[in-house]
Image (cartoon, rainbow, N blue to C red; front, side, top):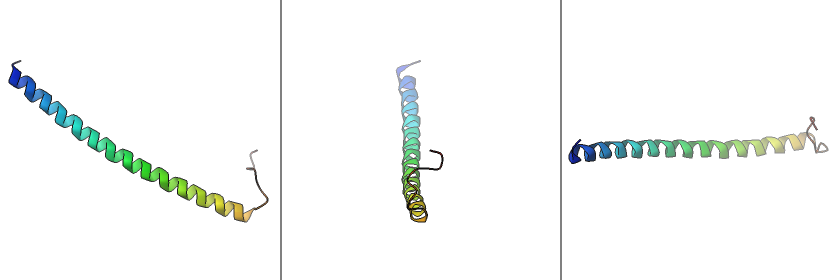
Length: 62
């Protein structure tokens, strides 16, 4: 393999890896946003349950 072919192959790999990194970063951002929404929703549900049964401090399973 001559030097130009080797350089071309490295550029192709680099481009592919950069694209994969961008895709993974976008997915990570999406997952983080979902987690934040779920945490917010969970907090709201806990508040609703607390208002329905203010004397209950432990879960029924405990």
